[in-house]
Image 1 (tube, one colour):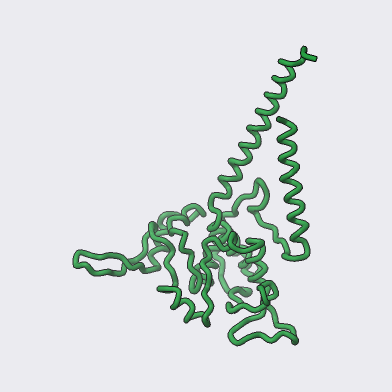
Image 2: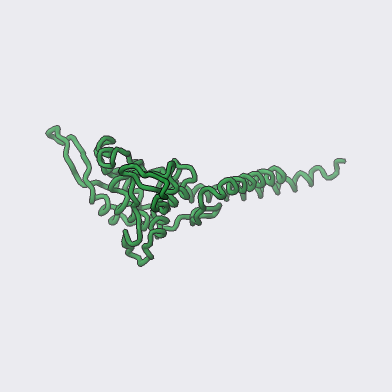
Length: 251
């Protein structure tokens, strides 16, 4: 049992090393608080990241899989969540007269989509559809590192590169051209807690929020994984010692 556990841990470590080596030189790695077997989400960063999403991203990008009540998990109070939800109107009904009506959103409602439908979204974005951000860090190769580098990857195009109409040069986008203008820059969002609001910090915080939205169970899963590993280590040790005791007279 001990040998099997050692083999499994060795294979996991080897896989992680090979994965890191394969990524080296391609997509820059960023240090995240939630990485590693004991990594956790920084609640202050999550709240700042939501502020960046609300003020910068929410005008174009939906988060269809999130409910406003989910914000309780990142440290907002019930009163704050109700106030955040009430900033938006949702279509409800029918009422007693059989008509649909608008009302302020409630914590039990999903995040309100900025557009009524996909066609409206494309029409307002030069024909490009802004993707839903609910699980964007899981939907893109390199995950959170890709999103972070994309946000920081806007720069002037080289002279030999011709950028299409309505497109912008980004060194991390496939083809190096993207329809979304640079959404984040130094000072684009003011933080209430006094945290430096340079572009790198804003990008890090919003990506942390997007990672949480894609994997809100991450901390629970890691805690459970640690407990399971410890359980099998203890069980394996007990079984090994018991085996030695029972079979020590057998040659």
